[in-house]
Image (cartoon, rainbow, N blue to C red):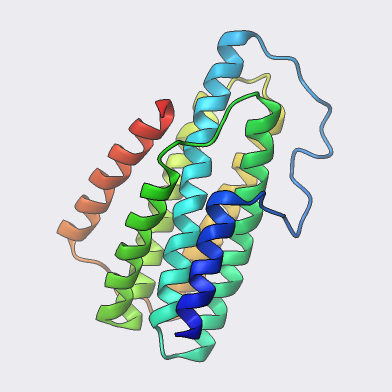
Length: 205
């Protein structure tokens, strides 16, 4: 019960509070940039999608930490969730600077991701870790596509996305080292389809 109360607190903080990063944003050391209106709209839409991804990451890691009985694994999941909180804060800060907004459907995204995380963790810790690996691989590929789409002039957003990609790849490597099981192909395809729906919707809403 204590774990689920902590998860509920995390949900409220993720959805309704201003996230606080433990590390400075990768954009902090860069000079501010002035973007043309079409560039600012594109950057805002892409960073909104990235922010949604971090909302989902909070839900996934907290759900898995609630279920696992392996205390060492639980601590690893909570450490990863803390790093994802940095990403959440950085993307939200960038959205504010770009005069954009988070997705209006964030409560829906969080709830769906939390349920998926519970289901994966309920199978086994190895399946839960396998879900982390596949999720982080897909997120890394998604962030790489954003590096190609973000305006070249938007160095701050590009710096944030590049750092996020490094962290996601490290999370996948750590989950593999911890004994992750490879997910079956249908599960991977379903995850890609769900991610496509989420990212396409969040681009606009």
